[in-house]
Image (cartoon, rainbow over all chains, first blue to last red; front, side, top):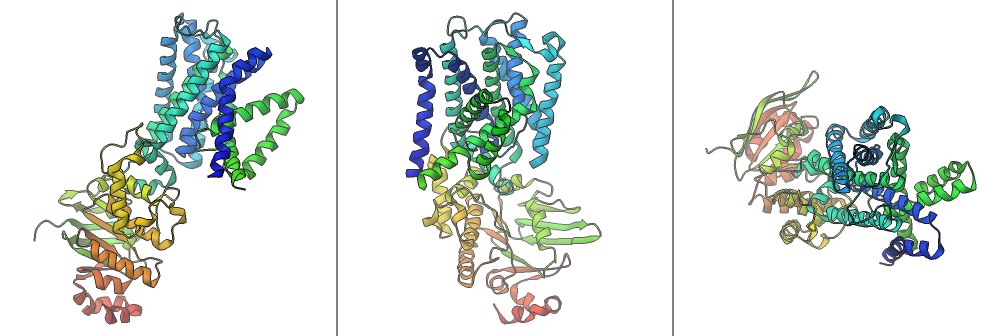
Length: 314
Length: 255
């Protein structure tokens, strides 16, 4: 039980830190930290959505960044065409992500293992090149979002603190949903399929339709992250869908602890803070980051969450 | 005789030039325990795989309670009342024993597209799981993760999982495989109890167990059924003795 309390304590500290961050920022006058952490919270949301299929569902999607782009472009393109209402932009972003996930999932889930990784990667790269070809929406150069989503007075996305809390509420909401899902009937089936698909078929579960629904839920959640990200940067470009971004999301999940509820948040915080501070020290920050991640993955089985659990036991 | 529960007609399955299942026909009546025996390589597993839906036959048919299931996928057959255990234990290793059984019950109790309520708190599923675990003598191990169960316990858990789907017909693929003497005896006793409730097709190498349990035995050699009948008839059959030359004493001395 003690092992539980260590990782619980660290998780609680981290969540409290995230909630109180704007207070610290306004007291210290450090505005930059708000910008940084808004990004962290949004990417934590994306990582949490990936964790649902990768950690709980055993589906190693290597194309999750595609949803960041789809959600982002839904906001950017609608804004460009004069539709500024968030009440339209956000549902469209979610619906577009869901439809993309449904099509990609239906095709990709015919394969398993390495082939599944490769085919999800291939589709995401396709999305990347499609976005690069959208001349009307900036093509390669990307698309500037001149006005953030308008929620007609309900919440002002241009207000730094309000926007941060919106992102944080979305993150907590998604974590809550994932918590309910993984303990539900549906969630147990999906985790059972990760564990032993043959057995699950033999007791009467058709594997694919459960995995596909899970894939769509995950993609839709990540589309939300994409819509928030476009608002955060006031910009969306094909680069957000590039395969290295999908890789970053995977690293966050593995780093924090696959198949744990709060691992992806932990992973996103550690990964992006490391990236930020190392890049301030040296131009060659990736040289330090790479080996560091390798060490954690090699020796810290179960990621940071796993290590905290063992630290408590030891 | 009434409609048999399981009817296999002229089933053929080839692998390249080898005919692994060669025109096999057999019937299993409701309430019967039908054993399938045969030397290694006789095609027992190939036959079972076609009954469970993991392998498609090239010709012939399989029907369950009068319904043609020859080409139905495994999960549909399970819904129709066909449950199986695996020769090599196949369980959800990172789930508890109770979770393994509860999932089997869940598959037969309404839709699993429920996303919000905690499935582990569904009393109906938990009760069904515990009943099935008690049935095989694993009640006290319900909350143990399968990884930590012994081989013998896992074999029993396989049976509990199969029972939880309330099957009409149980296909048991070598349930004694790898069991010690006392464990085997427990398993035979358990099967003797279960056969009162459910029809069973038993594929097994353990001859004493087969002759103790079976109502009828079909002998498979090179993919063909060379004999089918009650244990006494099979024991007396000359062709069977020849096929089982090395095991002849086993066939004649036990049972």
